[in-house]
Amino acid sequence: MAQMVTRIDDALARQVDELVAQGAAASRSELVRMGLERIIDEHRRQALGQQVVDGYRRLPQSDEDGGELDAATKALIEAEPW
Image (cartoon, rainbow, N blue to C red; front, side, top):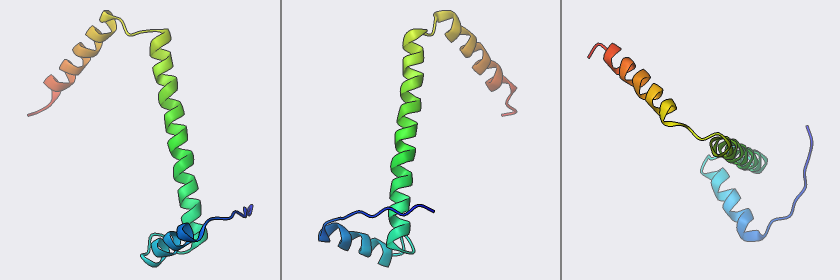
């Protein structure tokens, strides 16, 4: 496992310690790992979302595409036993 060393100000360290004391994580290291994982996941999701947007800009959905979706949705709803 790689080790990273960083410096943070005292106020941030106190907030980290408070979260650990409240049970948000077992240790400072775990809390920092959790934060980094969330940032990385958020960045990945934003990048994927942008790829979807870019794809629709390159190849916009046509009225015909929407019509097929509506028919498929209607068929799914009609198939429900309610």
